[in-house]
Length: 243
Image (cartoon, rainbow, N blue to C red; front, side, top):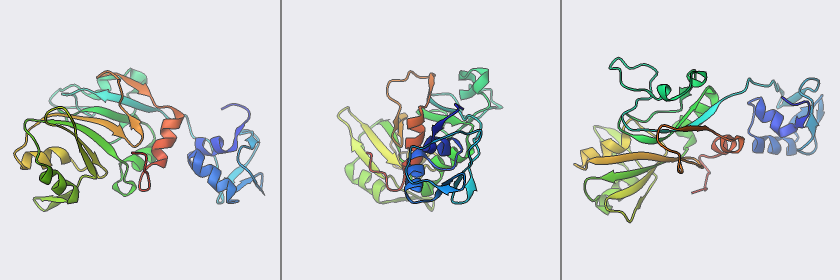
């Protein structure tokens, strides 16, 4: 870490709060610099000599974490080892990134946006249903989905005593193409909803998580998330109105 950094960036690098939340904590008088409350955000600190506390918790820099976005192809699995010897997403990564874990999963025939990291707190924040992080999927089916059925999906649908619900949907111009937005992410949720209603899935691609979009990344390729994207994911959720 550089000699002098802005206070909110330092707090975020320690994994205590996101930058935005750190600014709010400073304004609320909850941050101490060398035992003295800080009045405004943006103060420079020296990580080697300054002592920063948030709500009494001493900020200690974490090791540099890695956050990847991959466009997972179809017929690739998200586990590190498969007894059936199917291809895994980790085979698409260079050895230096194979220690990462996936942030949730996409099933064998599903494709699209997959996050990988070595940050367990980040994974919990993105995947736990209580945080209600939106996941958006592009779906192509073998026949038209009746809009009344789509409304039922949004209102709540029970299959074998398990409740399913989508947050929203769009009917696209292309024949039999839709987008679904989920926040819970139950195992095979979309496929279960459609298959139970005798609707076959021809394509299931995740195109967005929170404010991060798949865009035009080629299948099998990956890129690092920017700091702004990581912060944005950590700040989306229950009260997010970005989409």
